[in-house]
Image (cartoon, rainbow, N blue to C red; front, side):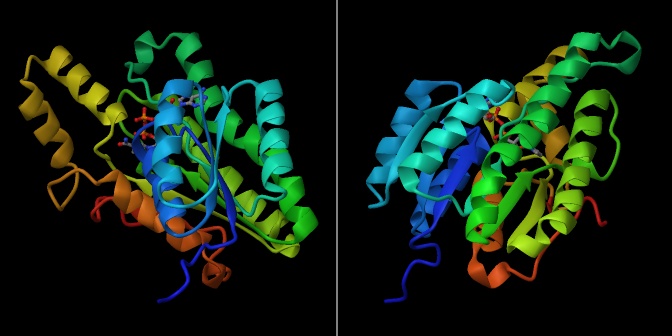
Length: 261
Ligand code: NAD
């Protein structure tokens, strides 16, 4: 039987408690990597850790609010000290709030930039030196189709996700000499708790049923469906492989063909 493709690698996934981050952590573990899992809620992480251990790989539970620089630095040091090294970073933690721009509270602007963009900067800054030291790294940012195109009522989220793609491209060029690649995956609507909240909001605001509201999001894709978290995770594992070293500074859309850029 072939060796698992990520055997011997060590990964850190932020926002691993549920949704896309959880799927990434499981897929990386299935591919043989040891996985450190970070999110705010310890109980969700403990449940996931038990699942990862049952796959026969090591895991570390790292409770951390990625918007807090000190917590991020502590979490990164603890993960690197425990694993000895980290070759794969998945910056997945994020959140989306929907508000019409003319009513936009400044607080939501700052929250969206903090959780989606500044967190990616903090975590990458804390982990990159270890990758530079070993001249080996795969940084994979979970961006969005909102990194490419604008949409109504999500100005702050869209600005933040455009920023994540900008950071991805800048670091891809700056860190390339250290054996590190930096790429983004850009999902369309994915069937996760975040999207379930969006569906509930649409139903509330429009007076439609939950099923109708979900159908509206499904119709944003030419495939007429939501993407699964496992599909996003499969692209993350692909980018994490040694054999993907030539792929750098790219944004891979996973949206059924909705956005073609
Ligand atoms: P989710 O809400 O289901 O899960 C988000 C995870 O991030 C949770 O584990 C949560 O605890 C964690 N998180 C949030 N804020 C955090 C913080 N301050 N510190 C640490 N962890 C934090 O969301 P999801 O749908 O799985 O989204 C994951 C990523 O994918 C986000 O970056 C999101 O923007 C992006 N994305 C999602 C979709 C979608 O349709 N669901 C589409 C495109 C991009």
